Length: 568
Image (cartoon, rainbow, N blue to C red; front, side, top):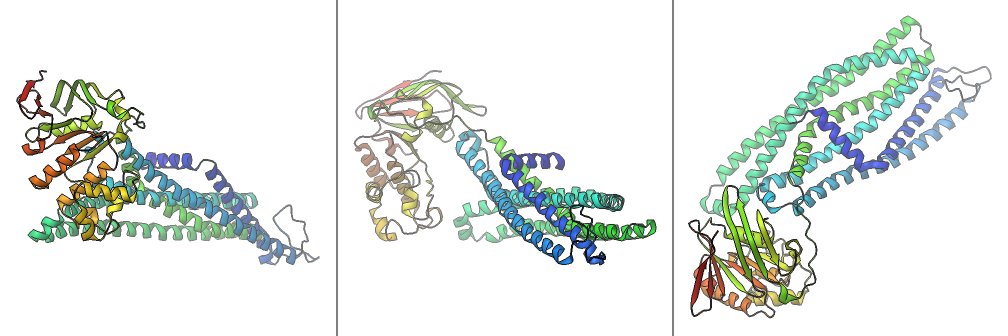
């Protein structure tokens, strides 16, 4: 874990890079507002003291104000300054709000972009809880950090402005006051380390609760059937109690620091008055410094409070940036090349690939002609899904080339559709689920649903806009697979990959859908992973994978099956 100072510097650098000119304008508005307020204090100080000149004027520490200026004129000028400051503060708040919200949303979108463009092998290594935590809790904490940083910058500019004006009017008195404040604030540095550790602890507690909740939701039906929810609840309660304890500890440290800040500022004021009386400071200068010090107490408290919130949120910012660094973008996939449908075959040329220490393929070559139906068979764990991943481009081969017709392998993403055994229904309705990756019209959606045999589903749920529940929870597993296949067909793919995509259907239903796919005109190249031999009845070629021997390819003419072995 990096030090708080280094992480804070990185956060400030990122915020400055995002804000650019707008941040400079915001700081300029802060300084201008502070100047207006400081001039107002300098105007009022002698008037409060009643230091009127014989001619009815007032002695003022402002050199540009003529001696003898009447009290009504000073009050009118003060009112003008108040109005000007109000306009400046309003403009400043609007600009700083845009900067804070924009910075947080830019971080959220940057992470989302990394997730969509990262290589699948990197995404597969991440837990869902880690991603959910980053996009929710950690982004929220970064928002708090951005707000605290902006508030601390604003308060610092105001405090520095007041300090400079106090030094200009009464240098010695101001120097004494600020020295006392600086010395008394030193003990607060020790609190920041405690706050940082609490921030780290709370971040990890929240991650544990998020991970626990995701595991619970993934097994919700099993938990309901077995009545094991109490065990999950107990684990969630333990994590929650620990997080509450950390938050209470942070609130306690925060309150102590706040009260210390108020007390130390009061001590500085008392010391200033005593020193001023003993040394014989001019009354007007002493009053100006006290007014400036009083006005600075709020910003100084804000700096202290903002710094605590910043340090508390830094662990979330570190984890978010670390996640981004783990997800370097994969090579960009360009839009599909305008090649004719009949040239969209698939070729493996001396391809070798591995997962960890295990070889999946070694020097493997095959050509799949356009429109072919090919099966991939073998026991669990031999690399059937990995072979599909190679075809889809989500897994990069260690050696060799994979070509889609005459097109570069990174250019056919838009020509491909992938359906797994547990299709993700991304929307709450049939329409939302089907329109996720295509711009199909309503008639096209209805036609696709009829093709995959869920016309009855449309009637049962009440139409294409009827709710299906979270991730299709209100329909069966087989119906979800059919809807997933309908979504894939709406993409008009030239390569259709089915990874156990029909295993929730009975054999007759599976045969009907495969017959429908075989009869598509034009027909995409279809690659099927399955365990049931019946799923390969219409395949003209079958690739058999095994851990004991190299891949074997069976040419199936539905009369005789020729088998040959591909040697390494």
